[in-house]
Length: 235
Image (cartoon, rainbow, N blue to C red; front, side):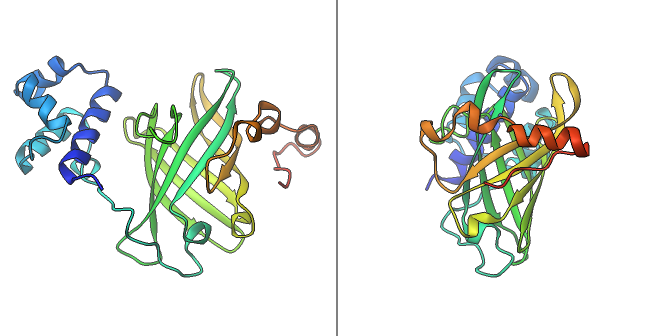
């Protein structure tokens, strides 16, 4: 388990890059040397509260976004509202026709101070599940789980105006994969969107995440034309 200093340093570096700031530009914003910034980001220096507040202001984020440290050793409550049977890590796949490629994303679920509530982090468009923190977009949010369905509500931490929600079938209680709908605001073009995604409790093999599997089925397209709504096929 990494130290809190290393975790906070990674967060600073992540948000700095999200704002397209070089170390030189960022060091000027908070009146620190480039070497000090590098040590902050590598977790080599513990950061005092005043400096942490100044860093958060420079990055245009709340200080809590730098210290949302959670340990994976803390189990989720074993009650009926625990999402996905108490599993902490979920792997998401969808096909992005704009980029013409399959996008991998990673969802982590954590308990909150209330035993019946859950918070989550969503790392969207990642190079691999081993390097999920090198995501293109980072969201924080909440999870509500019921017998048949789970809802996830997210806010982009680099651009709070960008919110996103998931609606997920709870068949993960009986099998290792399920389908869900993602909806929010697209950045290219800027417009409301919805898409379907495949979610798994463990990483899938390449042959299991083909474009054909992730794109709309003929039956789904037929339903859209007939009912003017998108209804997911069963898995």
